[in-house]
Image (tube, rainbow, N blue to C red; front, top):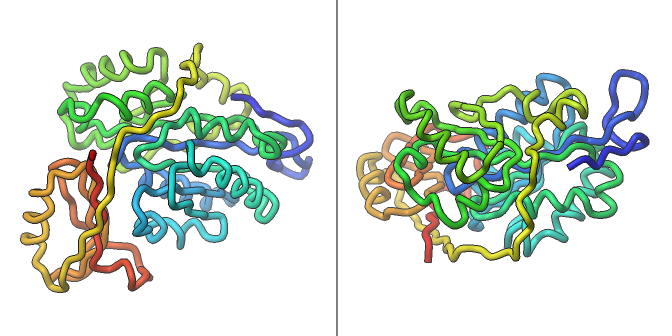
Amino acid sequence: MNNENPELGSRTGTTGPILGVPALVVSGFLGAGKTTLVKHLINDARQQGLRLAVVSNEFGELGIDRALLQEEGGPGYVELEGGCVCCQLSGELLNTLQNLWETIHPDRIVVETSGVALPFETLMTFWREPVTKWVGESLAVVVVNAEQVAEGRDLEGTFEQQVSSADLLVLNKMDLVVEDSLTCLKKTLESMAPGAPLIRSIQGQIDSQVVFPLTPAEATSLKRKSKPALVPHTHEAFESQELTFPDNITPEQLLQQLQSLQALRIKGIVNTSEGLKLVQGVGSRVDLSSPPANLPADIIGRIIIIRRK
């Protein structure tokens, strides 16, 4: 999508505004690694001295993504809750983007959708007034969990709709699959999104110039030759549930309890016998790691799990 406006946009050197602000919709199924990728883009923008605005839409009301991203994202970070940005919150997303433009004048925009949202409909927000006046090239990047594809798990419905809407696919978590499986993985994704470029990543590490090209011509080269038709929007039925855990539970006990749930997605913070742990799970895989600093006290000991209804 090209919303380039020669009068409004990001600044290049001292010549004044010449390009619209590049925008990115980061989508992907539950647990694909979207937040990790966005965190990388935030750090990359900071290193380049660029203002990056991030709008995050989390499924579930605990606010784990806010805890993971807000400190690094600074005043340019906004989280939208209570619905999905591709439908229920589309109006709020539009207002949020315009407010970010008026208050911080970002050089780049990232919208991270929830794991059940459809990127193409979210991307349409950048075509709406008044945002279309200042946004430039906009792309839908869909993050894919390589392990999920290798296992053939949950590849229909929402997953397929997301992949088929991608301008660019990021095949993430390549460290969890064998290299020999790459051809098969590519074939599976090609059947869902013919012609969509694909790049591989581990921990969401990608070259930001791939998703934020230096010139409109470079961005256009990422565009697929044809866009999927916009179909009536329907969501699969998902539900979120909050669980609480006592302090000093052992990591082994915690993992055993969580793995038995067979949830699509698990995310939260627990104070274990070995200290605070960030808990992230996808399918049967549940990982514990060190959490970010300065966590809000009210989210400790709580975990959100997401299942199909």
